[in-house]
Length: 313
Length: 120
Image (cartoon, rainbow over all chains, first blue to last red; front, side, top):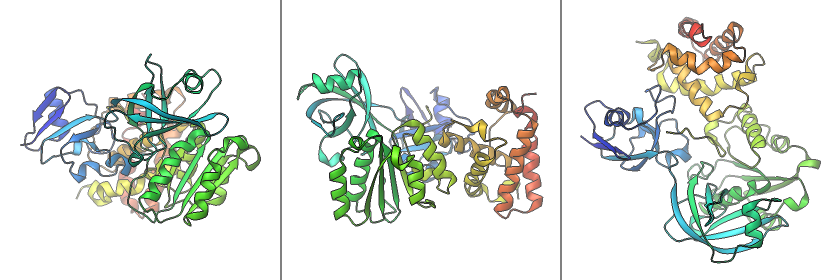
């Protein structure tokens, strides 16, 4: 029978046992509740070993591709090594470049000094040599060979002030992660994509947009970027140029004061968003309100990607 | 054939959950209990609830029901809110074309959790 492993715990499956049963018997502290593949409490990540399809029924595509599965309904046919969802990798990295994208947004590019797998739109925690840590979304694609973060400079922001004033090309940092399920999963190339962000919520969307295009996404892609002031609409020229050459890409910059709340802007453009896939980034209250409105307007929750909560294992 | 099988099992739960959750969020009698909760997590809980109410496999005890709703009872959760949920559950099934007789059976299973949910 196959063996299952979780940290220091391992055991061989007995007839009829699920991965959860075997792990619990080995003494591993895995949380669970319904034991029927419904509640999601026992969700784990498969580090090695094939996942039976039934153990991923109903999960978001972006969870499936990360190897997430429900241990209680998992009956593996080969050995499996499991980990808690979102268990962080940690790699050393160094600063490759720093450029101003606007008066208060810096484009920071990092080179990782060890292999680091991620998808554009996920986020990482950057840790400075003295331990100061901040999380940022990833605006670059893996094939570009660097991690691009778009950092808003906040008054008295310790990390952002350091990046703006003191950091030097070549300085070393550590990168933890990646986390988050807000990224493009290939497949359904005709599905309309709605990307909505405020402020530096543009960073992950900028990555997701280019990732979708590089995968040949053929359905319409609409990017809504909201900001308080004109100047907050950074990358405006580049995005407008891209929209001019890509017939399936629409760029909708909006000023929250004059154009109204971004959910109204979006719903005016898309009174019936059902069937689309949405990516929401930025201000938590705006993201939460948008998520609810899109759901109530007929979208499926599994098609709405934000920096969503993942149950801790 | 069990009730769960007659209703269509796991695919039926999957078909019902979004309809049911939308009804809950739009209902002024109970929507305030769901303000600020993580929607993905809540959807998973709704699936667990529907699976149980459909007579499907579950592992919830009365104590789990009590613990899970204690915070809401403190917020004022009472019989009228419980009734509203049962009503929306019935409405969801009716919308999916489920026969009255089966809806009654689902309502009866939901009803059996009333005292645990309301913490008494």
